[in-house]
Length: 209
Image 1 (cartoon, rainbow, N blue to C red):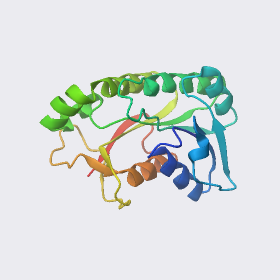
Image 2: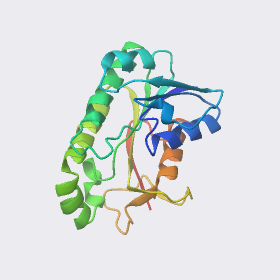
Image 3: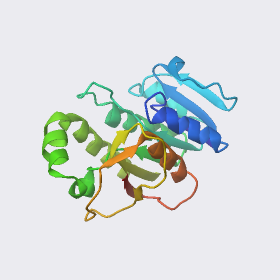
Image 4: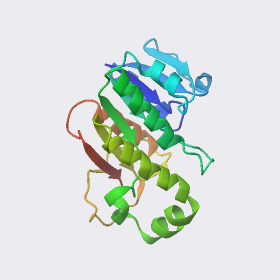
C-alpha cells in the first residue's frame, strides 16, 4: 500500500512512518521540514510542504492508497493546523479518488469527553489547551462529514515510554479508571494497525492506559 503521512516529523508522525515502513508499505512523509526526519529507508519518499497550502497537499496526495493525519501545532496553542490541514487533505483525497483516511485527534473529543477527569476537563482542555481542543473537535467534524472511509483515533496524553501494546482500545464513554496516558510509540502502532483492515472503519476509537 502507498501511504502518505501528514505531520510526518512530529513526535507521533515520525514513529508512524517507521511503523508503516516496517509493515512493508511505501510511505510518503509530508512536513514543512522533512530534512529533520532521520530515516533513509528505500521505500520512504519525502515531500516538503505546508498542510495549510491546498495545492501542495493535493499534489502530494495524488497516487496514494491511504492517508494518515498526525498533524500537531507544537507550542503554538492557537494554530489551526489540525482543522485547516485536515480540510485540505479531505479535498485532495476526493479530487484524487483516495478513500482511506486515518486521523489522530485526542481523547476528550466528542462523546469521549466523559472519559476525562476534572483536571483534564476544566484545567487542560477547559483553559490551557482550549484552542487546540476546539480545533480537534472541528477536525473530527470534518472527517465524519467527509464521505471517505475514515477512522478517528483518540489517544490519551502522550508519554515517551516504549510501546507495550497493553493499552485499552475502543472503550465506551462510561469507562472509568483510565490513566489518560499512552506512549507515542503505541499511538503510532495503532495508527498503522487501522490501515491493516476494516475493523475500525467509520469509527472514532479511544486508546489509553
